[in-house]
Amino acid sequence: MDTEGLSKICSGLGSIEEDDDRHRTGYSKGEYCLDNLKDLLRFLRRDDPETRNVFKQVCKWNVVSKDLVPIIEHYHEDRSMLLNAVKVLVFLTMPIEPGSTDIPQQLEYLWDLKSAVTNSDVATMIVSILEKPLENLELNKFTEDDWKLVSENSFQVFILA
Image: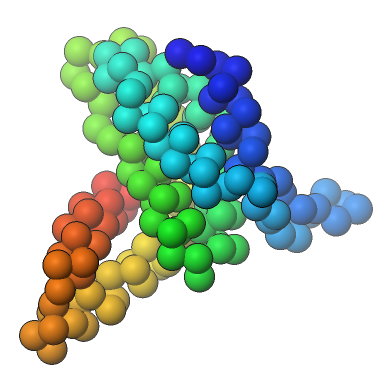
């Protein structure tokens, strides 16, 4: 695993904005936030399912609470940003391989991830992605793009729930 490259990708997602009392006031995405989300997704796709080193490192750095949740909350109007952040969340919440190493640590990380998602508005925003395609289905105007969005994201919603 290229820890330095992964670190650059994660640190380039953006930064939390705080007031003088260190209370969160917002989030500023990095200049290449979308590219970094796509790169992070590539890292996660190549992660060894037995060791899950990328998963563990991303969780250790608290990227979900620190970056992904704020990106989804503050930039949900940017469809590409939202979809890529959700895809990263999905890869992070994939089931643990029964033969993988360090299962108790992976379970602890998964609980932290799910806590970060459920203690925010992220689930609501993910469900909102499905609203228009499902409306099109009801009106018999369902397109291939709608199908791709529903089939990918309905699975994602169940994983995150």
